[in-house]
Image 1: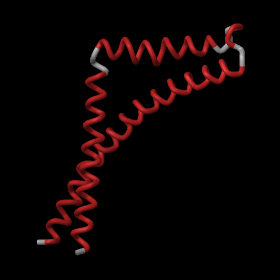
Image 2: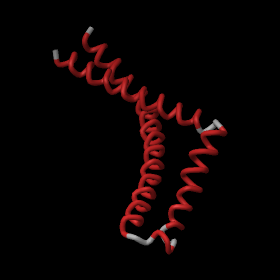
Image 3: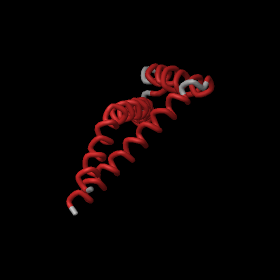
Length: 113
């Protein structure tokens, strides 16, 4: 019974690793798409981020409410960049760990027989 729960856990780990790798591969494909690069990588993560930072110093945007809105928008850009970075981090980690997970699964299955 103990091997069954270990095997189930390893299988879940492998499935999660596969999902992380698939997401990383999907992001790699997106980054090869000129529209994605133009609109999101360059347009949002670079140009819009710079525009928002400059807007913080605009005399017409100095009210507390406007400054808070700009801060939230700048933070959103940062969170989006972190989200994309995490997809790569998790995918790379999963890719490197996959063979170990599969080896563990094979060892558990061998012990059960």
